[in-house]
Amino acid sequence: MDWLLTGDKLREECGLFGIWGHPEAARLVYLGLYALQHRGQESVGIVTSDGERLQAVRGMGHVNEVFTEAVLDRLPGPYAIGHVRYSTAGAVSVNEAQPLSIKCHRGEIAICHNGNFPFADALRAELEREGAIFSSTSDTEVVLHKLARSRQPNLQQAIAEVFRELEGAYSILILTPDSLFVVRDPRGFRPLCLGELGGAYVVASETCAFDLIGATYVRDIAPGEVLVINRQGTHTDHPLPRQTPAFCIFEHVYFGRPDSRIYGRSVNKSRHKMGKQLAREQPVEADIVVPVPDSGVAAAIGYAAQSGISFRFGLVRNHYIGRTFIEPTQSIRNFGVKVKLNPVRDLIEGRRVVLVDDSLVRGTTSRKIIEMIRQAGAQEVHLRISCPPTISPCYYGVDTPSHAELIAANQSTEEIRRFINADSLGYLSQEGLLAACGADEGLQFCMACYTGKYPLPVPLHAAGRSGERASTAGAR
Ligand code: SF4
Image (cartoon, rainbow, N blue to C red; front, side):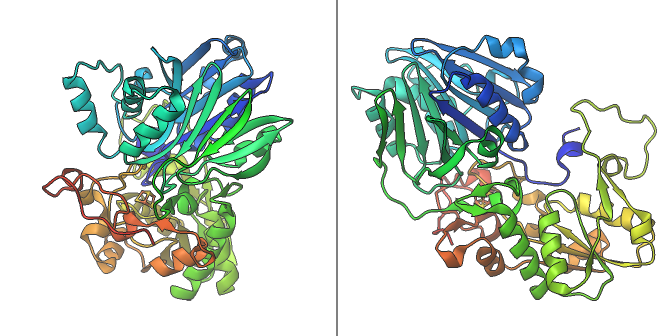
């Protein structure tokens, strides 16, 4: 069922939304999470504070399935954080739904996290040996334990201490009854931005969440920044060692909504540039450019604009696939892909098609889509991918198949072309992708899934090699 929803894609990680100082905090978080639903569909949660106590509701499913009018009424207070989740670490159950919350000697603390701590397992084992009891399998709970155990006199200092020790990819919101802490890791792997709404502060993974509630974008939370918001105002600190930034470039390739600004840059603009550059690097004689909807659309428009080939919506996507789906008992050819995508025969028949997609992970879905397009009468099908070959798994908060399952890690472009039965196959170069996403304007990215060069150490056993840590290299 999962593959039906996501296809052959890397999966979104998580989305964060927080607000400080608004009488309708829970409802605004609900709306913010609604805008961020594409970042995680497994579970959702909101924690609010009325200044004295925290209240939490978490559940499995989409934002509008868990939060009804009556449920939101159970979340009083002007301060709130919320989270949509797709698990990249930990199990799939409501115990893992975030924000996680605890009561400890520091009082009540709730936390939500977008990212991953590659070495959380070892830390967790160490804490368990010391007697810690965990209620979830989430790596985020390790942070809570570390915060509770820190001997620092206040939570702000404890946060600085814990994150100096914990290497990883993290954008984090921490809510206590009287403060909101906003933390981004020193490399800035995952996005996080600050906005303003009628005197209230808002924070979100993507700016599309601000647009929905009418908030104004103020700035990105800086890599390594700890922003504290409370009744005294805001206080920003940079207690973590400075590192070379390594913004996840895949946010611009696939995850981010095209109407968002991520790392201060329009996602739509990046994708359009990727498509134009792809047309320069991988030209082909054809009659129409067809995107694999939805995320391939902006790149396909760019490809069409650069090449002069007509853009056509030759594939229609069904947006109404629920989380439960009854499959036919008799096998129907390419059933799964057909539920989600259907070719427009009228546009495709007799045409040479350039099919533009934003990624090719295992190759299985591309093969089925190409077969569908051929069945609809296409004369030729040329697949163009608006990023380089994906050759390495991600350890920084994105769910990727293992090295063995990544087709480009194991086969040449020609072998993949034969497997997917395309007339030609072309990828955007690493340099082309970096330029399209603003590297020439000074942005520095993680490209590890395309280069295998990890900007932060990762466990070697997870990469299918022996030893403890993989060698690392700087971001590009
Ligand atoms: S490895 Fe890829 S998906 Fe993971 S953070 Fe780096 S660019 Fe993003």
